[in-house]
Amino acid sequence: MFKIIKKKVLNPTIFLMEVEAPRVAKRCLPGQFVIVRTDDEGERIPLTICDYDSEKGTVTIVFQIVGGATEFMSKLEEGDSFRDFVGPLGCPSELLSLPIDELKQKKIIFIAGGVGTAPVYPQVKWMHEHGIDVDVIVGCKTKDLLILEDEMKAVAGNLYITTDDGSYGRSGMVTQTLKDLYAEGKTYDQCVCIGPMIMMKFAVMLTKELNLPTIVSLNPIMVDGTGMCGACRVTVGDEVKFACVDGPEFDGFKVNFDEAMRRQTLYKTEEGRAYLAEKEGSTHHGGCGQCS
Image 1: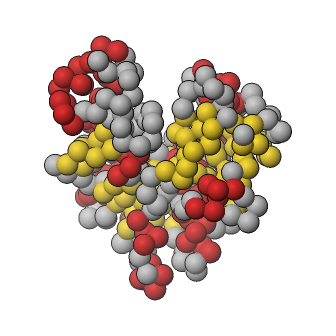
Image 2 (image 1 turned 60 degrees about the vertical axis):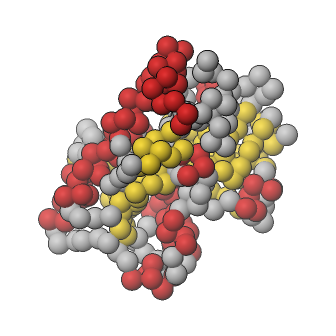
């Protein structure tokens, strides 16, 4: 069992939990994720790692209520435990593999949308701990949905907050803030963008125009987290990839966002899964047990 030692309500639908998971904490790196389960009958829920402390043996997760399983999870309190806490899964951020001196020469911008702020935070924190200043754009619909502002301020070189309704910070989408920064004379060598699929799609459309290489982190539907079920299948360039084992990070310029979003909608229904199984053939994978 994996005990919850800290719970924080970030807003009415988004929660932070720090969980005792020593073996996971010792091995995880920014960019990876875990799959949690509340009990023996619980749904497997993939969640990006928001923070970790290898000495304390804890891992921090942030999640939003989107259905029954996360609604139940939100009612857990400090002292309660998860039945399963599996990880770290996926590949660490590819930027971590570059030499520190090389990273220090790069001008890097992180773009976070909504709950995507949670997986952006550990990457920016890692950069800060290694003496690398990066800029961060955090966008959300309204001020009430903004999360981890103070934590991000402590590690970002420059932090730009933007809200769709103009209730806090700059007004407009994250793409408008990036346009404004370029208009003000700023340029960047690398972008990392994490958030809703539709936000990442439009951000990449802009960064292509700016000739700004962009890494995106995909968090589609996942079932087993081992590449067996095929739920998280995406097309990157001309290749079939699975976000849980090949990602979650990919070259944003190569991701087929329209196909990925359409596939996620289809995968939610039995009829849709059957259609995908027939269409995708031997590359579909069927280990989830949901596809006949």
